[in-house]
Image 1 (cartoon, rainbow, N blue to C red):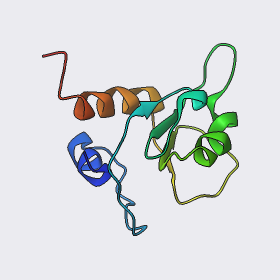
Image 2 (spheres, one colour):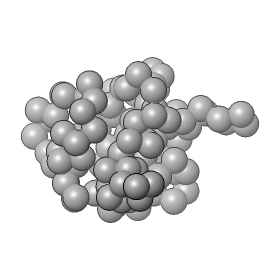
Image 3 (tube, rainbow, N blue to C red):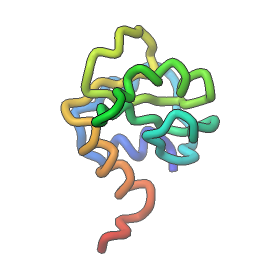
Image 4 (cartoon, rainbow, N blue to C red):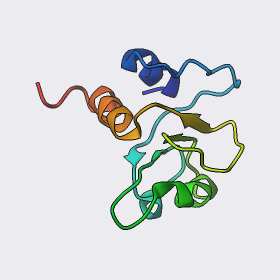
Length: 102
């Protein structure tokens, strides 16, 4: 599924897609070690670590988009700030994988 289609189906506040790129989404990740080209990385704060410190690593491994609900201290057109990163990951997972909970 195309990234732009996913964003449209999430009905989220992420509307700044005028960056001139779109891509076929490979998979969704919250662990930067699992990121491959064309993945979307979700920088989630956990109990032991903060996913925001792995954003650069995820981008270097080929992530085409990163979602965060914090200020990662990086300026990159592939980073999207959302209100709740966990919720966005759940919604996008539902969209990408065809509403498996139904």
